[in-house]
Amino acid sequence: MHAEMSESFSPKIEDRDLPEEVIDMRHAAQEARRDAHAAVAENIGRRCRVYHDVLDWLDASLRVPLETSALDMQSNTRMAALWPLGGRSVALGRALVTLVELGYSAETFPTARAIFEVNRMIQVFANPAGEGLARRWLAGKTPKPSTVASALHRISTDEDGDVAAHRRQTAELYRMLSEGGHTSRGSMDLSISHSLRELTMGPTDDWGIRAYYVGWAGAIIWEIASSVGLILGLAFGSRFYEEHVDPRLKSLAAVDAEFPFPQEHLRNTPLEFESRET
Image (cartoon, rainbow, N blue to C red):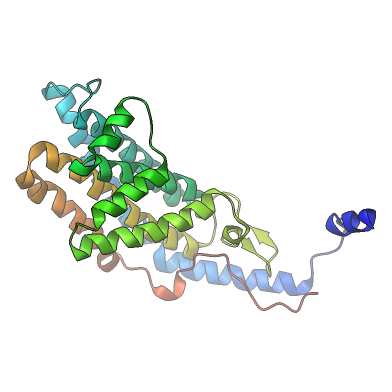
């Protein structure tokens, strides 16, 4: 019985011609991809330019005190914890934008997950209630992501309704990113078209998927700007935040309206067609 079960679990892959039905569906898929390309390609470039501009400004803003102040990143202070974390968030954000601009899709989840973990640490360490965890980090004892998440949850209960709601939304997104990062079977459906018998490996030629992930990356760049902006606001004051950080957050929030993607072309999974293949 054991040998029979093993054989059924590991059947031989036999040769066959690609079914005509699949060939026809692939032709239809190519048409859909061309339509999506015509509808979204220009605004993909425009959106990514906004993302790059915001990240460039954050980069420059973090570099200035290293040139013009006595900021000591080897000290055991809150800013010595926050400053390099801000730099890592910006660096990972640049990697994310580069990936989605090139056409990577679900493969970006591990990078996005790392960004979320960095930003959660920033949000906790920047709060007076997070001083203990910040001191542990400075001592080389990195808190577990679950510990940071619990601390952020406690902090969020004291925040206004809009901020707390945003925290809940990002927690749900983090759950999805974790599934992708851990390659759960369900997450693999983001890379497989069963009817077309295709795997997405690397940059996709489906511009509907490209547009979806560019828009999705924009929400993460907003999170980076919000988190790093929090550091800059603590360092330079509320007026600096209002004059410099807030306008960039608004520019990120406005890209959906300024550079729209037609909803009928957006898709987060490869095209599927009804198949009669057996």
